[in-house]
Image (cartoon, rainbow, N blue to C red; front, top):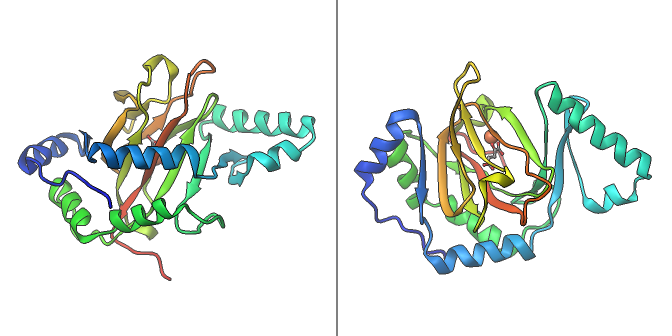
Length: 238
Ligand SMILES: O=C(O)CCC(=O)C(=O)O
Ligand SMILES: [Fe+2]
């Protein structure tokens, strides 16, 4: 069902990853597969708003937000911005595949989760990164619309054995002026790289890299869709 371009010059991918523990690989899926996943993201996924409020992560649906009195909605927005100003903030559309957010996933994403958890995929990732013992990949569909962002952070969670972050991009025709840029920093916070959202790519990077998704401008013409997660050496207990 999913056609992935496993046949590649692995030596050059390895060499690229080894330079700075990150790589942005283009045209990873066969065109048809990428189009089918992109369509599911745009039409079948019910996204919650993942946000950071009063120093806590929370998730709330569009409908729940609409049901709040206008003053409470403004207050929520204010609190998200306050947290971001203090250094930790995010607001974006998120669907956790596998029932983790209590919402069923479209069949296509469930199958995709299985595919990304296949021995072939683990072998592919291990061959590029040199990391052994990958046995699980979590999966999240994400959607960044105008006003969404994710401030600088790393993805280290020792207890989950997260090793390599991945972002499959499904965003055609994005203009860098619209924000939504995946940015990398040194541990001291100096900006090193900026990757513009694109279609049918796979960004892979060591979870220790500080990174962010820049604020999506109010004039962005479309959403930024991705499927993201982490390749892990510890699987969740059932
Ligand atoms: O969507 C991206 O480009 C990165 C997302 C990310 O950093 C995260 O979800 O932790
Ligand atoms: Fe991240």
